[in-house]
Every structure is written in structure tokens, then in C-alpha cells.
Amino acid sequence: LSLSSSLSPPQLGPKCVKRVRTVSATLSVTSSSLQMKETFSRSSIACLMRSNLRTVKGLDGSVQDAQDTQDGKDDPCWQVTQQLHFLVEKVHTLLTDEVARVLPSLARDRDPPSRPEIAAHVTGTSMTETDHVEESEKVPGQKILSWEKERGLAFLRNVQMSDGELEVPKAGLYYIYSQTYFRVEDVAENQNRGKQMLQYIYKKVTSYPVPILLMKNARTTCWARNAEYGLYSIYQAGVFQLGAGDRIFVSVSDVSTLGMDEKSSFFGAFLLT
Image (cartoon, rainbow, N blue to C red; front, side, top):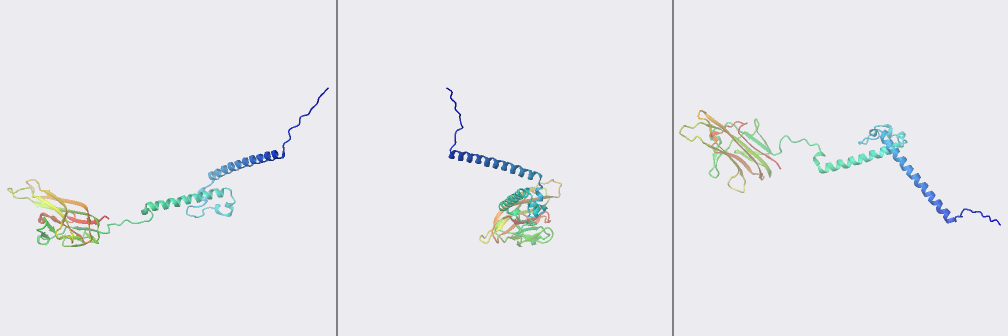
């Protein structure tokens, strides 16, 4: 007795066949997509490596090359380089706007003023004692009445001067300074050789009857016995709040000892803010 049998492959139903075809199609599409991405990436890098980016489009929008022509647009690399330039232009604009917002001075070209808008520098001038001595019983010192305000190194800019006083037109912080140069002759043998020299800077306001002392400095004379005279200078400066219409002036302990050369004795102020 012999038995014979034949094995045949299993038969798939219609649903299974459909699923297999769907999976196969999905795998095919995914593989093609990956290949396209890889090809595009390599193509883009190749375009950038061989392309002269400066010849596509300048940051100022000017066309510098034939790449912006119709022939250039037919090149596959054209879109890659063009989009890169658009991105660079956008970033450049954003950075420029941000810098201009944070640092406004960079956004406009301004020439710095040669002198402050409100300023004065007056210098010593030749004068007799009766011309420049004014001693007040209210405050110590002899007021210097005469200053040169126009010639040489002296100037007034939006500041008035009268009776040795500088009047400021605007309220604000002012830098005020003064230097006085003293020429003290030798004293007799039996007199005290240590003579004190003082410089005062006052402020006058309309709401107060007495001048207000802003600064004070002092020096004491001391020189060799054989010297005919001694030369000394006192300089002081500071920042003060002044109101519109306030006046400032300089007084010294003895006006008759002053050396009123324009480079040695001077007085001034300028607005800071």
C-alpha cells in the first residue's frame, strides 16, 4: 500500500494580501524619502562649497552677478544660496535694530561739541587795587571784581558776567573751578614769615541774602630768607547743584598779592547735566 501526498503553500486571504501590499508600499515610500533627503542635503552642501555667496545678492539688495537672472534661477543651487542670503539679511536687520535701540548714539552720527553748551572761563587781567577790591562784612575775603571775559583764553557761552560774578541760565549740576596765583614779597626780619593765603568760592541765590560758601582752600607762605618774594597758587574745583539765575564768584584773603596773568589766575564753570 503506498500513500502519496503533495504539500501546497498556504493560501492568503484577500485582507492579508492587501496588508502586505500596504506595508510594502510604505517601506518603499520611506526609503525613497530618505534617499531624497540625503541627496538634497548633499546637493545643498555641495552648492555652498562651490558657490561664491557674495555673487548671489549683496546685503544691500544689489545684484552683483548673473545668478539673479533667469539663467541663474534655472540652476538647482540658486534657491539654496538665495534663501541663505535672505536669512543673513534678516539677521543683519534684527541685530542692527537691537543695537540702535540699546545704544542710540550708534544710530546717528553726531559731532561732539568743542565746548559745553553752557560754559564760562574768565581769566586774570591788569587792574588797580581800587578797581578790584570789595570786602564784605557778611562773608570773609575780598571779592575779585575784574575778570577778562573775551580776549585771549577767556570766553562766555550762554553765561552772563557782571561785578566779577558768573550767572548761570539753567538749573543743573555744574563743575566749578578756580585758581589764584599769589606773589608775596619778603617781609621784614622781625615780622612773622608765615602768612596765610585763602581762596573762597561763593554762590549767591535770590532767596537768601548772604552768599553761600561752596569751597575754601588755604596756603601758608614759607620761603628762604634770601628770596625777594614767594610764588604760590591755590586751585580748587567741585561739582555743585545750581539753580537758574544763581551767581558764583571768587574771593581771596588779600587781593593786592594776586598775580593776574591769564594762565595763572582764572575762574570758570560748565554744565554737566
